[in-house]
Image 1 (cartoon, chains in turn cyan, purple):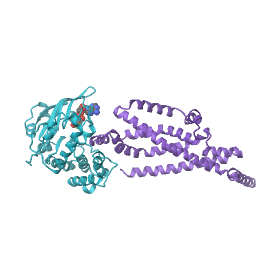
Image 2: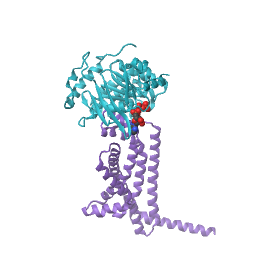
Image 3: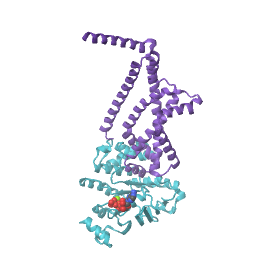
Image 4: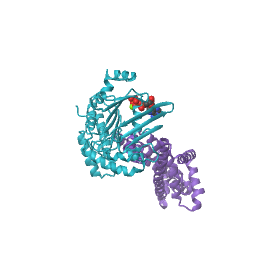
Length: 289
Length: 241
Ligand SMILES: Nc1ncnc2c1ncn2[C@@H]1O[C@H](COP(=O)(O)OP(=O)(O)OP(=O)(O)O)[C@@H](O)[C@H]1O
Ligand SMILES: [Mg+2]
C-alpha cells in the first residue's frame, strides 16, 4: 500500500485535540513552549510530540541506554529494531517512565516527564502501551478491561465508555466477546483487546513492545492488521518489533539500536537496503535470511 | 463371664446416663456450653474483622515498601509488629492486653479478647496477603500504571482482587486456627465454649462428658468450615477468572 499517512482529521483525533487542550491547562506551569498548541492540519511541526535527549539508564554496572536522543513527530510511525539486549524495551518503557532513566530528558507534549513536579499518571493516560504478554486483567470481562481506565481515570460515564469500547471492539472484530474473560481468548484476540484497552484512553501515542512475539505464527497477522489500520489513521506509534515486513510496509522511520545506542535511523528503504554500520548489516542479515 | 460383662456394661451405661443428665440437663447446665459457644463465635468473628483490616493494611505497607522503597518508617513499625506478635504466645498477648492495657480502663472482656486475637491474627493475615500480592505477575502492575492508574488505584482495582482470590483458602484456614485459639479466653475471665465446659466440670466433678462435648463442638465447627473451604477452593480453581 502506498498510502503514507498524513494526520487525518478523524473523529478520534479531534476528540484527542480537545482533551489535550484541557490537559494543557492543567500542566501549564511545566510547559516549555506554549507554541505547540498551534499544530494543526498541515501546520508546521513547531515541536515534536516526544523529544528524548541524552537518555541514560544504568542497571548497576550495566549500561542499558547510552545517550539516546530521538524525536517522534505527531502521526509518525517509528519502528525500533536491534539485537536482543540492545535496550529497545528499556528505551520504550522509559518513554512512559515504567523504567526511570538515570539521566536525560523526555519532553512529551511540551512537558518534561522527569520533572519531579509533574504528575506522571496524568501523562501516562496519553501514552497507550501494548505489552508482549498482553497483561490483560484476568479477573475482569473484556468490556471491564477496556472501560475501567476511561471510567475511573477520565470519569467517563459507563454508557459512554461502553459505547466507545464497543465501537473499537467492532473495529478489531471482537465485539461479540465483550462479556468473555481473557482466559477464554486466543493470544491474537488478547493482544487485539490489549490494543483496544489502550485506545479507549484516547492516547496521543501508542507504544508497542514486541506485540507479536508471544503469539503463534498464525495469529501474528491479525494483530499486525490492527496496527496497520491504526497507523493509517494517523496514530503516532513507537513499535519495537522483529517483524521486518511490518517495518518495511508501515514505518515512516526505522531506528536501529545496539548496545544501548541508536546506531542508525532512516527510512525503511535506507535501513534495509543500505545499512551503514557493521552491526546493522549483521543484524539484518540474520533476521532477513 | 458373659453375664458379668453385660452387667457391667448396663451399669456403665446407666451411670453414663446419670452423668449426662447431671452434666447437661440439671440446672440447665447445657446453657454454659450454648452461651460459651456464643462468646467464642463473637470473639472469633470480631477478631476476623480486625485481623483482615489490620492484615491488609500491614501487607499493603510492606508490599509498597518492597515495590517502591517508600513508607520506610511505617515498614519498620510493621516489621516490629510482625516480629513481636509472631514471636510470642497468644495467651501472653491476651493477658497483657487485658491486665496491662485494657482492664485498668474498664473495657469489656469480650472487646479485650476481640482486640487481642484480632491483633494476633492480623500478623498472620498480613504475611498471607503479602505473599498473595507478590504472587501477582508484575505485568499486571505495569499494565495498570501504563493506563495512568496511580500506585494505590493499581493495587485496589487490579492487584488486590486477584491476590484476594489466590489467598482466600489460606485466609479461611487462618480463621479456622483462630477459632480454636480463642479457647484460651478463659484466662481473662471470659466464659467461652472451653470455659463453659470447665465450669460444668467444676460443678459436677465430672471431667469426661463436659470436656468431650466441648471437643466435639469444636471438631464439628472445624469440619464444617474445612469442608466449606475445600468447596470454595474447588470453585475458585474451576473458574479461571
Ligand atoms: N530490570 C532490569 N534489571 C537489570 N538489568 C536489566 C533490567 N531490564 C533490562 N536489563 C538489561 O538491560 C539490557 C537491555 O535490555 P532490554 O530489555 O531493553 O533489551 P531489548 O533490546 O528489549 O532486548 P529483547 O529483544 O531481548 O527484548 C539487557 O542487557 C538487559 O539484560
Ligand atoms: Mg525487549
